Length: 320
Image (tube, rainbow, N blue to C red; front, side, top):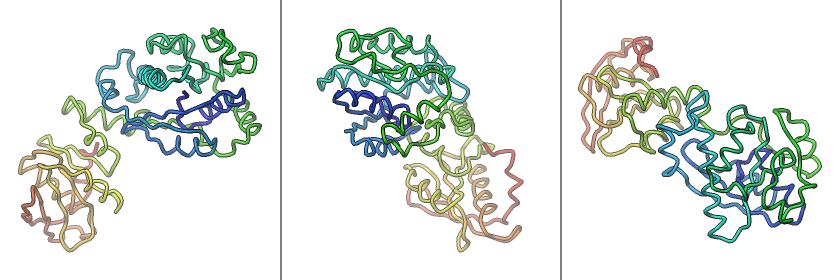
């Protein structure tokens, strides 16, 4: 059972084991911060079966107080890796697999893939004896699959560090031609997204899945009364934001003029709704100072606010 992110290293780990005639099945975990698209593409290219498991409910507590802290963004990498491997172990035991493997490379990531972190994750996941890292196995202590002869340790690898030349050469040898660039696939490592989630948690302490999905779309503003306004940038943004609307939210549009959908999640003061209406007008195609009507919808009831289209700069200090 192998953890497959869809990156080159996880693909190679599966290929290395399959080359030993080991039956390989992959598993990919998903949350609002990383999905399964790359893993599905990688599994299809390798012709390997793939299980996709939603991890959000068990991952959610790590957004608040991860035991081993955050990286540079809002990424609890060590605890996230531990959780994934632990959950892969649950599937392993339930479905009759013999061990779990990952594509981790010793020293590739300074926080989560140094020797101490790899040992920590193995130990705290409860799978220390049954966790194999094929790409760096010769640099690590042998695990049970190697000691028992399930896997030929001599045919495993000794990759280390951040270089990619050996991986690229190995990919060519295995006929792996399509793989993503070595960028983080987790939104929690993105500085802009990390800032948004930190700001959200400062204001409300906890976040629902819907709250987190909204962070991916549009411009976000914190209004003076404490409410948030999410302003679509594009038609795709508008559609996604509308799809995330919940009961009790306010939805605003400028009437008869192309412009953004503005969503104010949850309760809002009248002052904040006036501010959200100003945002809708400012980011619409209405000329500066033009008289506009902004519809405000809540729970099926619609009312109209009349105002003049303000300059966007009026809201720059509210932008998250």
